[in-house]
Image 1 (cartoon, rainbow, N blue to C red):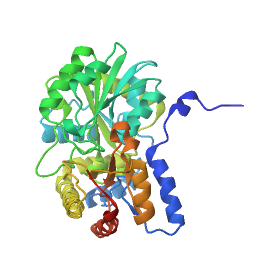
Image 2: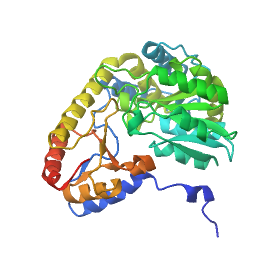
Image 3: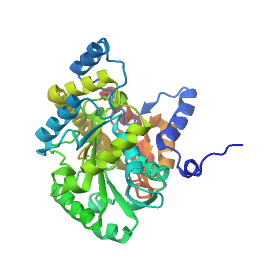
Image 4: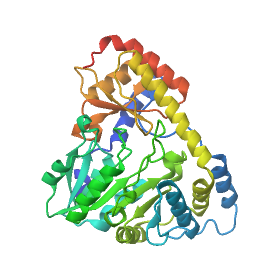
Length: 392
């Protein structure tokens, strides 16, 4: 009888799959669910992007196997976007690689860079796929804490304690999911020196690079001195242009890491559907106005929602970026119990902080990818419950 591989048994349950199970139970009971769990934008992509997809889907040759490395025009478009946005020049042939969504690249980079038994430094709290990718590649996850007291940035002295001769990779995610923190160029300069001195590859997940607020702009790891020599960065069109289901993103940075990732992809998957590549090119080159409008919508929502929470006594800091709210739980609850309580009593789904790591305990993540009327309804329901809660 065949048995499940040990690496599969070692994987923790995928957080959002577990939330979906709990949510379905409530739906089966007829509860009016307000889902603030998964970050899936409710806004449509720009019209020009949809039009491009439709037009190119009708063209002869659009439905053949696409190139593993992506269309030259798409790689060039991303390089142009990157230089305009960050002031960093990229070689579209050796320092840019289109991905079937950034999640695909995040999972595959482990197979291209680590060997079984190698160690990987992973933020806690952090995106669960960093841990899953390490385990599936036979690597050993080593977690470093992100604390509110340090603005949810890692401390170099704590990283130094974790580093060993087996350390091969360090993961960062700024703007941060779930903490909403943003890193400075000075931080990236410091972390680049740290990695370069130890021969560690930095993998920076930058899916939320364009969802920043109050006039603030996120900076890239590749802007740091030596950044392209020490790191690879993962970008996505999912949040910037509301194209989550389209599955298109990019890896950019260290040429050696890009080559290794490309070799893994060549053996394990195919390229992106050609009409989607053409549509992504349209987004990168022609839809900056629409991207700004999308960001403005999320900024207005976070101000409305977080201001509303604070008015009813839930002391929640205003997020710096992303479309999430990282909120402390009331006294007497852990994050999972509070999420269960909130859903059972109000029909509101949110994500327990502990699902992102042990240092996420004490927080819940709420996603503002819902229309304003549903967010206002959520505030009304929370207000009715608020008398039962005590916050530190």
